[in-house]
Amino acid sequence: MKLTPRRITVGLISTAVVVTMTSVTTWALAADKDAAPAASSTPVRLIVGYKAGADRASATRALSASGARVSVSDAAKAALSAINASRVTVSPERSAATISALRSDPNVAYVETDQPVKTAETIPNDPVFSKQNEMYTVHAPKAWDTTKGGANGPTVAVIDTGVNAVGDLKGATVAGYDFVNNDASPADDAGHGTSVAALVAARGNNGDGMAGVCWTCKIMPVKVLDARGDGYQSDVAQGIIWAVQKGARILNLSLSGVKGTQALADAVAYANMNGALVVAAAGNDGNTVKQYPGAYGDVLTVAATQRCTDFAKDPDCTAGTTTRTKWSSYNKPKTSTSPADVWVDVAAPGTVSSMDSRGNYSTGIEGTSFSSPIVAGAAALIKAENPSYSGWSIANAIYTAAAKRPLTNGGVNYGLIDIPPSLNVPTDTTPPTATGISPGNGSFKRGTFTVSPVGLKDDRSGIRNTTLWVNGKFVSYSRKAPFGVSFNFSSYKGPTKIELRIFDRAGNNKIVSSTVTIDNNAPGVRITSAPKSGSKLSGTVSIGYTGSDANGITRYELLLNGKVAQTHTGTAAFKFATTAVAKSFTVQVRAYDKAGNPGLSAKYSYTR
View 1 (cartoon, rainbow, N blue to C red):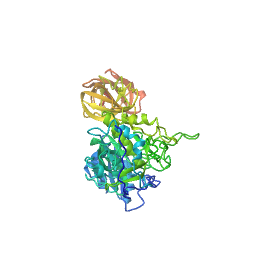
View 2 (cartoon, helix red, strand yellow):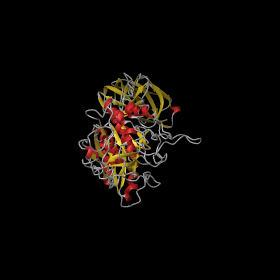
View 3 (cartoon, one colour):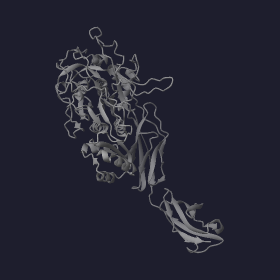
View 4 (tube, one colour):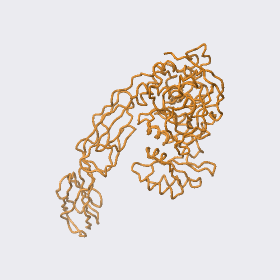
């Protein structure tokens, strides 16, 4: 079925919807990245990352005692705790001391100043536009012949200024959350989020309004930006994590800024590890300055192309649409003096028609803010056709088709998206391979050690992460090569099954395991024969000793003045000449068991 293009009701979009992006690059604070904001009345927001196994309760008490306020929202705490972090606010006059104290706290891995974010759109320059040319540019009508999202369309999280379920979005939203006001009512008081959501999922072919890319998709509104379109990265990070935890596997972030934080990077990685795809706007600065979260490697980042200007003469909207707009951010090309800086992946139309937060429709809205949801909608159609696809699989499908529509002026890795050929691009179905796991079967281990894959390989999509399971329970993970997982086994004892589950980016997995003996008890060791402590010695001295351990002792060491002088694997007496030691000296025997636990005998003191 070929869908007939239809007109939309055109109204003047609220000026609150569209916020100029001329200042989008102003994320950075003063030259000192940890300095407090200049306005002394403005509280300083800090993101605190904790070390694995840290005593967070102790750190929280210390923060409270210093006058810092720890985020108390249950949703906020639950979200950031997934990446072992929390957010605190502190008065400007106490910020430097608090940062210094946190950096010296053994429980704290990092401290960073929370960074602001903004919407990524520009002011509309054409208030009347009777057809949604952008949909023809990406060949959405041809894609709708195959799917409109299915009977129960995928859920797309719109992490933005909130979403109002008006007009073509009535009945299209699911429960969301407002991280700006910390409540469950993510209403759109700026207008931006509603316009973004409409491009993803406005109900099509209903004789009213407009058509989004995915007609049956559900929108999960996650409010992280205020009425001015401003926000902080900790809220964005929380929004990403919350949306993933609530089941969204496609996330649209039409926001950007020139500085990132570890918390936001970790949140994106968290989404990726859970098979989700993060789609983000490249920004509207018209230059190659990296924008975040778009510049993170796990994000599908979208630039903007020029619009189809004469639909009547060009029904497929192809002429001129593979040219990137002059205001869109883009990749830095390689030059004779510097390498390429590649972070923008694809492009989509940057001038669109959409709906505002009051249900009015308008045209000529510009910005990569509105390019991004077109791609997110395309991702949802791919997910509808391929429910098992991971975020990598969906992105790979989009990249494969876009590569056949390169931009005339470059600036992106692939090209202009093309939805129909994206719908059924095969994914990677071959699991990773590994020859084993370290430590292997029969090993004796203690305390904290790293469990690592041996002979790890993947033929296509690449390794995404590993998860560690101990006696059938998940305990930790790694998302960085070489993908070993360090864990404290001090609470375990005896035969213990350790298992690594290795995932590639397409979601295929390989399991490798072994059974090791955990022994955290020191061996017993004592001196059985030696001159009486305090004696004055001459000639050759003999030290007899014995040891005991449930799993056996691997070696004994003779310590003279605390330094290893001799090593035995059995209990033959240690012998040494007094001429080889200091005038005053101590004697001690140390034993090691198979797990490496040390045990020490009593210390004897002598002179010569």
